[in-house]
Length: 167
Image 1 (cartoon, rainbow, N blue to C red):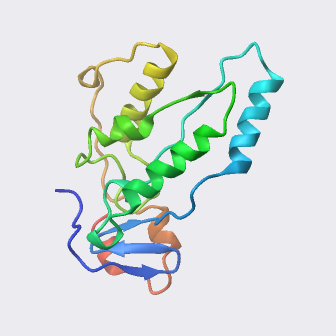
Image 2: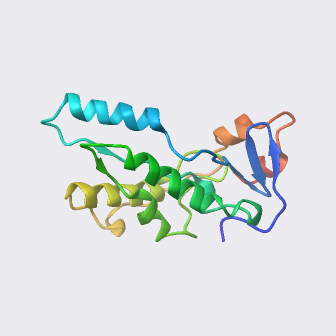
């Protein structure tokens, strides 16, 4: 309901525009340097509980048909990167967020998740760390409008009017 996945996407600089929303398309299979850095940190501080939570981008769940592989690409990237970590608690934000696919978890014109996406990631973090999380309905809902985010900013000039009209 929040994303139109049947439109023909087009690229504008580093951004994929899909009708009235924007995405970052992800490539790659693993981040060896990131895994090494997190593992080195955990080894340096053995008395700390070190956790890592790699977050899927919106394109994992809100991709147009042309980019259907984004789900598995990002799922594999996260799993492969976690597999290289030692002494680190890995958090399954991907799995938690996948249970809520179709909900409005990411901003339409920004690379960040919104508060709902952050909530689901916090649930995953709580599960991994043994921390109870508050129920979603215990939070006050605040809505703002008109925000045009970073993905709109990263588009080539002239900026796509379809994004500006649907922040």
